[in-house]
Image (cartoon, rainbow over all chains, first blue to last red; front, top):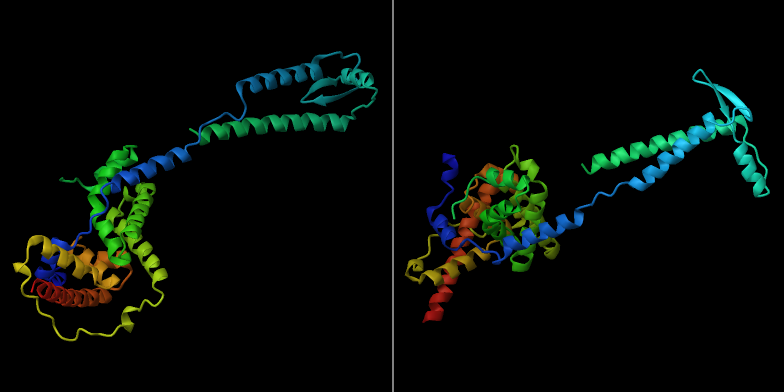
Length: 140
Length: 191
């Protein structure tokens, strides 16, 4: 430090104290604060749920309805069956058949197709829950 | 106004108190602006550079919570931005080593400065400082106004310690010469 002091000329120190400063504009600080405020406002993202409460309600109803339709309706008219987690499950898609007939179409799902559709529905449902959870955690 | 330590305002600003950052700006605005002005020698550019640096500072406040010194970081940003802007404008900017050493002889302190009125004196000093080369102006400003040590100036400017010492030496001589010239002009005008 002492070595540095030798560079410090008292006359130059005096000169800088007297005329070294260049003042900024009067509103310098206020302008920056305004810019920060504007920027913060622009960057604020309002949280909007990925799935609205109404949509959740509809999804739940649809899910429950599907579950009931698939697992608990008309065992006698079952077109196919499989052993699922130790339970003997009967899939009854005759209602679809009736619908198809009504629109002059006749189609039938094979066992592989039915399982795939079911798995896909489950995966989509899980994905929706994960997305919603991530969405919430981002805006926490 | 008596200011507190930077960390006090930084903590408050981080807690969402924007006016606290305003106080921090006011605390350092003079030197930040002066530093930018010494390089770009233009009020509009200096204001823009200083404002941008304070904006960047606000977005990086969490960094200064630890060990980093706010002013060193701020002045470094200002110096880098101002220098790059200056270089864009002055393509023929000469590096320090290319310059002719026109100050081989010692320059004495000018006489008659004390006789001038305070405002006139301030004007002459300010003009003389403005005539300094950009790097000399920056190093002298940091050394004499900010009371930064050579290590800090090294950190801000990226110059080596020996370069800084040379700049301090040359800058001092340049300033005294410019001051003498200005005084001469002033005296001629008065006569």
